[in-house]
Amino acid sequence: MTDFPNINDTNYFTNRTLDNEKGEPTGKIVMWRIRGEEEFHYILKCPFCGHDQEKKELFPRKPYRPRCEKCNKSILIAKLKKKK
Image 1 (tube, one colour):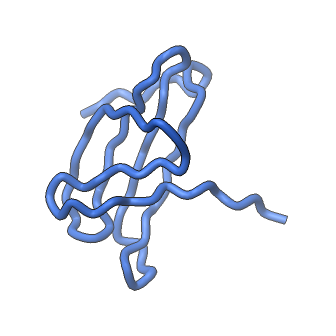
Image 2 (tube, rainbow, N blue to C red):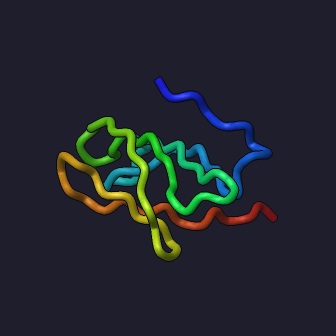
């Protein structure tokens, strides 16, 4: 099991549910980047096939799109909308 970083040591951190094609919340991602590092670390439960994976990966630009190792689907990590 991965130890999560101290939030003050990161310059990006998200913990959210992910929806499948039907809009149902069937997946999850915890994703972060340590300050000064280029690679992101993430723990993903694919919303499409349910596969669990943990990986470090470089994402050159936003929006970030990790890919499931099992079903090969790209998973959009969209910008969160601010509450009004």
